[in-house]
Length: 61
Image 1 (tube, rainbow, N blue to C red):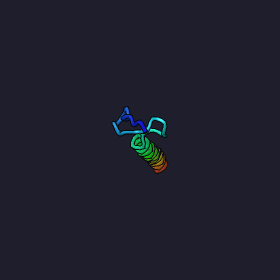
Image 2 (cartoon, rainbow, N blue to C red):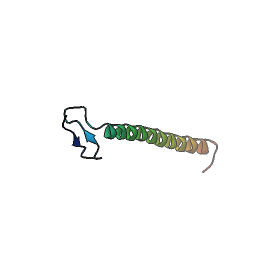
Image 3 (cartoon, one colour):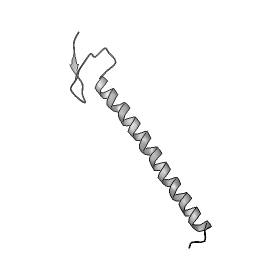
Image 4 (cartoon, helix red, strand yellow):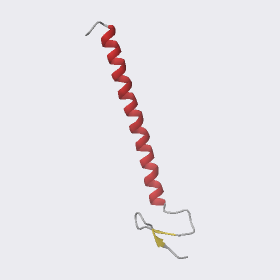
């Protein structure tokens, strides 16, 4: 078996195999973090809209 280093992290990989598992794991973690941040941003925007609606409904401004 002829192992070559991964272009990104240098881990020895089999060129006929599935590729670098370290890189795949990092991409999975990055995808999860992106999804969590997207949901958090959506929650912040929704809270801002709801608080503005409540503020104007109660007669402020």
